[in-house]
Image 1 (cartoon, rainbow, N blue to C red):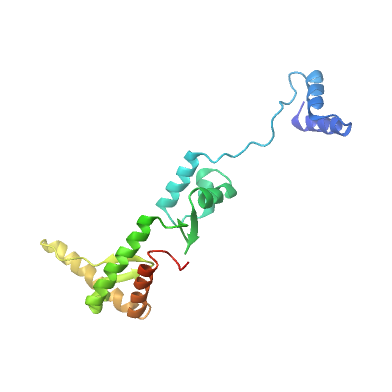
Image 2 (image 1 turned 180 degrees about the vertical axis):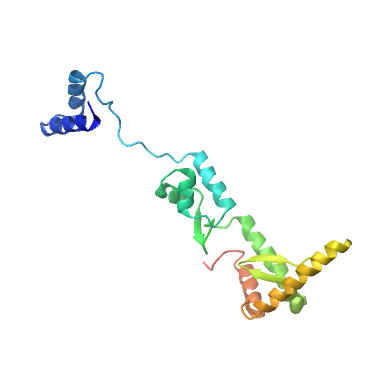
Length: 197
């Protein structure tokens, strides 16, 4: 018998008032070898450590990965991916990037240390600081230092000139001196947290 024919028989027996076990016995008596096998129901999707590690590795590789892409890469449901990201990994989406919901103590200490260093460099010589650093979404790009090798010097000069030109273009769009200084002071005061509590 076809599966849909069995479903019709099951529906008929259910309408007669038979229980699940009685229906199974009836099917086994009439259709012994071809009867459907009793199953416990829908299979449960288990969040295994391997799946969690796979999702975590993908997110660490590309913090801008979309949930849809994670679903395709892992083969698990959208809800399970969301559950893994939020509950298991403790991450949330911030500015189109997956970040830990709470910064670790090391992350906070690093933010405070870097902010103090930047504030000190900025207070020593603001013009030189702004000439050598360009802010791009909290990523710092350092201009190259001079080297002994002439070819490396030419490449360094090229990139230093390119960074200077880029710096001049972005002067109007970049944080003002006061905003940068206030941002570092705020990070130091908040001990590296994202926002005030």
